[in-house]
Length: 439
Image (cartoon, rainbow, N blue to C red; front, top):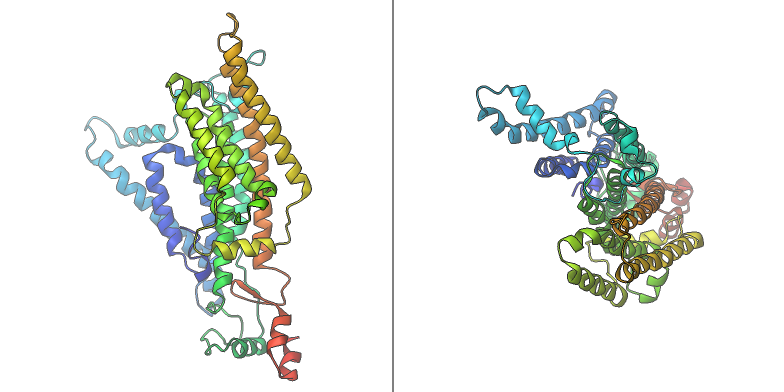
């Protein structure tokens, strides 16, 4: 939703999106998994949205006004939601105590490092002989967890800040503006004055759609990477929190151009998303056993695998077909190494996952190690999640590069977010003098 108005030089959807995010955060604290990437993207958008003013001073301080708008929206939403707790509190309870209790619900440091046998870094380090929880104090663990979480979340968030900040505009000289208006047969636009154009020329609709899709793609990869970072390294993690990483990753299926089913075998992103979906459910198998849902587990995996193999997901979002066509022309091609890596990981992990299922049925766990199989499940799941975090970070980097190239490419002339090739103008303009001006 926040990326819909990126082509209109508008900030309304960003403010509305921040309000909706605050509502989600106060409903469930696990939404914090998305907080840093969403914040950095919105902060970048504050720099990309400008005021339509000829004053250089106003243009310079425009980002400050956008940040103030976001701050008012966020503080206002939190104030409305927290106000009942303050108004209807016990008279013997101070306002500070009420606020601290709410914050402890959002940041539950008192619950422990993790719950159950979760497939993250801290559980892997807690297994003997490492036993990190016995080596570090309870007061020190949250600090290490916070540091490691920021280490895994901040780099992808910086990329999202750059994507949001990029204005995607190239200055067009005055004589070129009039020529472009003539070629496109558009009426004179009020922004065609001396200097730079500050208002979008609305003829580049397909380009606008592509830019919005580029931003959405980066935001989906960014929130997936951030969620994996939080799941692997943060304090107080539950097994089911991995669904927060799976949710944005699943949306990426709508960006796949899989109308030609032969392309599915070499589509690394499609293969990775399907593999990650199955692997996520597999890591939850010990919890599924406890809830007596083994039959549902095998049924869901079988149906999902069948659908993913026979009926690949087609792009269905408005404008996504244009986006897919644009991605094919991006200067960031899929390489052979990426395909081989995904195929090797898929084969190796499938063998290990099926082998563990078989061993659990055939061989009983030793008496001295009753939790052997759940621990093996979690350790292998942790290794696969670390690989997934690396792969998603890599895809976010490539997507951000593709977005930057699309918005600030090598084209000689670009209006708002749609690029116009000089050769296309030359082929459309018959006057030699106008061609010479354009060159």
